[in-house]
Length: 289
Image 1 (cartoon, rainbow, N blue to C red):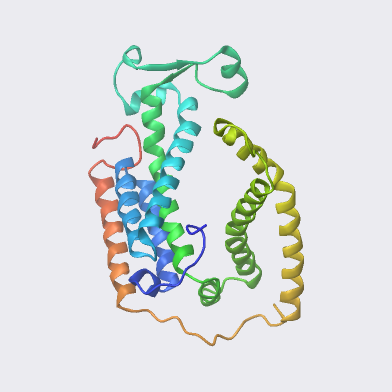
Image 2 (cartoon, one colour):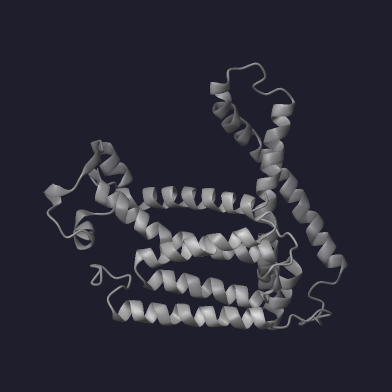
């Protein structure tokens, strides 16, 4: 799972202070949230190309491209069926009768799931536009995980005077989420090594993958719970939270790369302000569209 865990490197992203990366993620999230959709799309594309500077950059770029594509599809589908025509008319100011109907839902979909009676092309486009506010945050956040050790993240939160309990919870999450996917992947592969689907037609492989994924849930949970117990024993043995604060052996200085990033963040803030002044804010109808 190369896209969810830290790997050491020597490019400028690895040399940035963790605080700089956190502030960058916050700025990207804020700019994408308060500006028109295509600014979020541009931010997503630009940040995606930063993955080429990482170790094995082409492979990571391929992974992040696939992840962004999946996120766009999922976000679009979670928004489009529920968007009423009253909202779509503000985005696409034309008669509703001119909308392109893609699908007409059965009545029980409308009553039970809350879908709009018709799924239109305009609704899908609107959902895709909203999805770029999510993808920009996703690609900027993963940069922190890929280029920062958990120790540096811990030092960063300690400098920010974040309570140790909260810091510990965040670090456990950062370590556990990638571990979940690794364990599931290992469990699925072990089932195929033991002969699952052997000799069966390849067309049935997706079904066997789905079955193997379901069968991997329980052993993965057992493994994670056992690991949580071992982690609790480990931190207690080392005297975690014996004192209110911790001393640091390694200092995390700000370098010229950090100041360059601060300049980029300032430019993004100015961009967001100008976008809203000239009618390219997130509110609809899009005055500057």
